[in-house]
Length: 445
Image 1 (cartoon, rainbow, N blue to C red):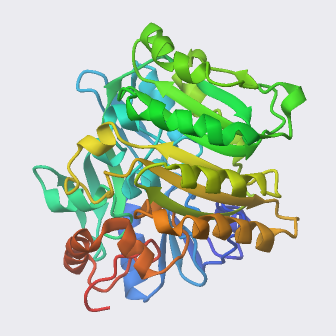
Image 2 (image 1 turned 180 degrees about the horizontal axis):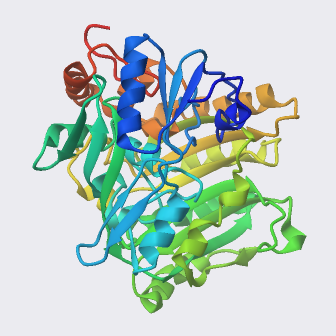
């Protein structure tokens, strides 16, 4: 248990989003489920505000609080892979880079984050979109069981056989129902090499490229997932130096199948217009997973706004391009996730993760350095693009929310599903002990 008098306290309260600076009274550094039970019971006994920290990557900063207790799971990073059953068990402090290394050692993978220093816990509990989602579904779709410490300090097991309703809620309902101490996942044969990488065009060409891309996506096989970024090209060695600092449209892809077939499928996109460069090539899956790590490091300041989109029509494309060309910070960007495929083929009510009919998700990221006086400017740019797309909003992915209020949380699920989540919250956490999250408030609160 750390307090402000301990030398390790300040390091322990730092999280990925450097814009969040909170000072809890206690940080309980758990190493096993028994520690989590003790921390939760201590919090209840002393009426302490509770935060739960897994990887500490949530943009809203709910992993930390002011004046309460943090149930810190960051030291619980064990992972065990069973190649025979194609399953893996991971602890809640585990990061996706470690998970992928362990599963790829035996040629297996599941849908995970697109940055290796993202934690498995928050991403899974919010749904989990990533490079393999169109082939294998969201991370939550691949969650097959979990051990959970509930608000009264009881350890329970959730699976299709044992408490299927809790498992349903954990598959997208966030950290509302307890502290997960163990995640069990379904794995899929993949790698070690995949066809992956970005094709990059001048941002000025984005309207024409994105109109072609929209048609390309409409018939893309499920094995292909693409993620588009409107960004300023960073000075990374992998990118040609003459394009560093230029505003670009970057369409990245991962093909989860035969590499020769993937080359054929991607050829029309790679050949469209006049790309500045093309880095699509066979490469280790783990190398592609870490490709974005340096672009979003710990400690920078981040402000996000996000929405699902039903489609991608001409007006949307023009709005996104126009606002992206006006970005001031070289670190800010917009990222567009291609959905569909296995994400859409699952039933809408199969999991708490919602809006499976959406075609894309747009996440608008205002980013600046801690010593830069541009937070207001970048936040305003982020809101400006978000507001301009208001007529096209189609729900929202809960993991991309800041602290935006209960109405936005309802939009993440829809009214019927939100009522089902409230019923589960009433059963497991009627006092709303676990409220520092995208909160599903119980009926009595």
